[in-house]
Image 1 (cartoon, helix red, strand yellow):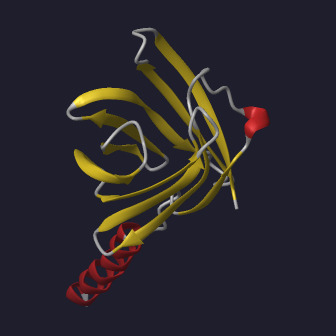
Image 2 (cartoon, rainbow, N blue to C red):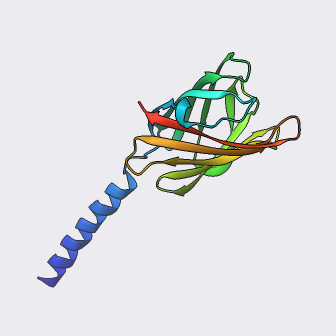
Length: 155
């Protein structure tokens, strides 16, 4: 009888662990830029729509926006949230991005151009999953430091 109880508990715990492993990533989905709540540094572009999609063991991030001059931008990044830089394709001022998991709702992000940091920050999805905030810090081409935040609403 005791072995049966232990087996049942072990199976139940296995299901709980499996469910936790496959829990929905709060970053996945489509996010729309909320300009009214954002503070973008002067001279920076804006990511108007950001889409996170799971691709097997990786994540695909597709971004559409405008650059500092209002010209359309489009980029696609595919990689893991493991802190390693993966190439990004598109017309951006950087050519690789590294995401690192901080906790269930936050990732650190670092963008680089040819190995040199362009900007870095933290992406945090609200507990209710309805919004996300990206805080950014960096140094512009003019050598001046900048910081700001972009707020997105779940579409």
